[in-house]
Image (tube, rainbow over all chains, first blue to last red):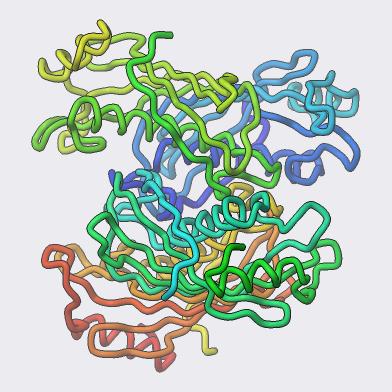
Length: 141
Length: 141
Length: 141
Length: 141
């Protein structure tokens, strides 16, 4: 995987369940934070909205492979890579690593450009496609 | 406390933390569900807002006394009562009981009628005041 | 998909995010509740533990396809089916339906029988294998 | 309020609800993180418990006054102060500030020293009392 962005997450006690480790659902929240951090800090967009009047992004698929348990107080690095770009969708892949650089989870999510008012998928606009292309090449966004 | 509404909540595994009991923050979510259930099922208002074009409700204070631990799979009854009505705010009180009718928490929340566009408190409109009065009297809302 | 169990979930306001719909991470919590309900109500086991001294279950993979948005106050039915049984793992598939019987998400999770003290996977014990076999046939568990 | 510790929190998108701001229940999680950070980083105790074989801490009361809305991506400073020490309990007070140093919430929590095996409150042990005294004086802990 070729990372285009890394986001650091602090594990909260509230992220953890009676088994004493981070509940599996919370990993999706860590991925979400990494996406928003990428869009905001690298692309210059506010959280989930790609421009004021532009389409939003909706998640249509997520998959996670859990490889190691994580504990309260741990700090994690979420690495995000671009796996594929389609007509209306693009796919990210992720690796989550702990401070010892151990892989605790790998994941993929598929996002669709979505017109929330019309409630339908729309083709990826050129200015987003350019951002994605820049990132896929490793070139500045 | 004179209950004006009771709402049943199913404790989720995800509500619980590494100590094996419901995390204290989640009790506020149980109260929130009881309020929304009251507004929707008794008052006929959808979710959090008092009508589409009217002001919304914003929570300005919450206090909870925790009296007993609750476990995954438990079912709780949240009793809600009206404690006070002011010019722009009203106060609910709550009792949360487990199936053995044991008090697991008591609580109070203060809500303010809030114009989200202007970001300021507004006097309680008459149609809300009438609902509150009905409830306080025990009369039909 | 052949359901072996259906679990009803009430959508909480807190499950929803600034886009006004259930946040995608929360679907995994709905699946988790369905599993625990199946293990407790059908198999007679307490939540995540399969017998007092037996192994626990650890989730090693989850995948979700999101098909429709869900709103606060909705009630959902989570249908769970058994997709595969291996030496140390078994796979569930799921369909989440709204009151209009519309499919809002489909999903799969892979669980491994796990010795939490030794922190390693263990072969599925016979008494669990019998439960799984009963369920796969649709015979009483 | 005299702060004995400040803990920085990153607001997650998942902390926010359909009103677009941090849900009120999540503030309690921010306070919890501040407490754990204080106990771990200042006192040298791991997470929530005061030593492996000693008593734990249980929260018996929380109160929060909400003063301003907080948005996804905001960074907050949680200041914690010691308000009172009793025989079995101690009280923290808190101020939560945004980057513009605006007070977004103030709060208090009461903690009791708790023997989880016996399920009862116990007097604060001397080694905890010494930690609390050091902090209350502003002297090194």
